[in-house]
Structure formats: C-alpha cells, structure tokens
Image (cartoon, rainbow over all chains, first blue to last red; front, side):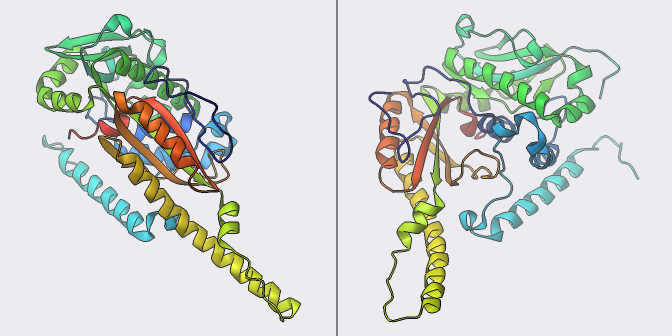
Length: 117
Length: 261
C-alpha cells in the first residue's frame, strides 16, 4: 500500500495489498464463508452434505452470541435483508433449491438395492 | 461408514499444478497432521492424514457443530489452501471436509476428473481473488437524504409529524440509494476482474460493523492488475459519504473454484 490510508470514509484494508504477497490471518467469518460455502465441491468418501452444513450454520448463528469466537463470526448467507435481495423471491428460490437437493440425494443414495421400506 | 476399520483417511485441501512443495512454508494441516503432496500426472493434491475417530461421518457431523473445533479446522484448512495457492502455478481450493479413504482414492479422483481440474486451473493461473465489502452508515445516508424542508407557518405538532415522516422516508430512500450505489461499485470493480461474484451480505448483528453491508463482492483479478484494483477501491471509497469500503485478500480463489461441476 503506498501512501497513508485515510480512516473513516475511506478504505480500510484488512490486509495490505502488496501484490499478492502476505495473507494475514483474516476475519473468521470471512474464512468460514469461503471454506464452507465456496470452494470446489467434490463428493468425498466421507459424506457431509450441504444440508448438514446449512443446518449447522443456522445453529451457529443461534449459539454464536454465547461463544468465545462469536465476536469473530459474521456469517449469514441464507437470510438477508429483503431490500438488498429483492424480497421473498430469493428465499423461495432457496427453499426450492433445498427441496431439489433433498430429492436428488434421495434419488442418488440407495442405488444398490438398499432401499428401505 | 467404516469407522470400525481404522483405515487411514486423507483430508484434501486443494488440487494444484506446478506446485513447488518446498515453497509451501507450512507443513501442518488440520489437527496438526503433516501435509504432503500427492501427484498423479501433472496434478498434485495436498493432503494430510486424519483419524476416522474424529473425521468419520458421524464424528465429523458432530464436530462441525462445535464452533471452536470448526474455527480451528477452518483456519487450518485455509492456511494450507493459501500456502498452496502461493506455491503453485494455480490451485483449486476444495470445500472444507473433503475426505477420502486412502491415497488410491485421491489418485483415482485426480485421474478421473483430470480434464475438469485442468480447465479450472487454467482459468485461475496468474490470478488472485480479492474481496471488497461496502458498509453503509444508515444515519449518515439518511441525514443526506433528509434535506430538511423547513416548513414555515405550521404548528409545532404538525412540524414534528412532517419531520418524522421525512425521516422515515429518508431512511427508505437511503436504503434504495445504498443498494444502487453497491451495484455501481460492483460494476466498477468487475470491470478490472476476469470474473466477479456478489456474495450475500454478512449478518450485521454478528459482524462488528454497525453499518449495513451493502456489498460483499469477490473478484478474480490478473496478478498484474492487483495494484489497479487496490487503487480503484480507494478511488471508489471517496465517491459516497457514509459508505465505507474494505478490501480483503489476497485470497485463494475460493469463490471461483466451483466453475467445474
């Protein structure tokens, strides 16, 4: 970063932008947002599905205030200010996505005759 | 799954090309286990052994709900992925908790998905992800919007009501304006990027920020334009009172790794 960075109304870099060099410990919320929600999804041998992670993060949000790490966590990517996202459309879309994912999981899961019921 | 058979499981961090393993600068991963490269053809995965007692299906599900465990694991994962992105020509970060039962399974993955990985890696080489967040200060914005139309010749009560009404609609106007400004910021930043994404805003109640997060953007930028991006962020920061920008990064290309399905 060249020159002084003005506080308040100006930029406040979490890390300096020294041309791709130093990655300082970032905000935990930023890290969780990326490692849980982004990154390439490949079905490993140990299954932790998206649904689990979504439930997990909802729980995180509920318990977060009482925990040591709470201050660092600022994640919430399933529930947004309606004025930012254009109302209910997105929520409905998400619910539909969730239903579809569940359906896909059901269809893909018990291929080899292990169907229960 | 196979928790009674104590097979060695491998946690996979990233898939890379042109990895200079000696430049990683970190050799400990999740749970403090040693990280090692695993090469198949021109692709190298970074892996570390994990104990199925802690990382098997059941245990993993349980542990992911322990915020302290999750925090430590996420940081360890990010540290290795970050090191990989720096020490390789390109690196595709994998989502947290991608676990395979042994080396053969990982090699199989690299061989099977070779074309996908190669395509993704080509897109990422020589590029870095940067994050830009914008926070709007509701009060400052509303103040601006509420240009106080000084009513004359009205009673005090009427004046109060009018003022109150103006404040409320000013707040709405401020929100609309902040959203429009965020759109403008994103467009301006995306112009410097190869690829750009808008992530949902983080929860204002949990972030330490008082303002609304109106932009949570990720930008994949050619390395030789990184300075330009930083300058652009600074320039944009001054364009609107009550809106503060925050630049984060360099990040491994988490937000741009999912292009391969």
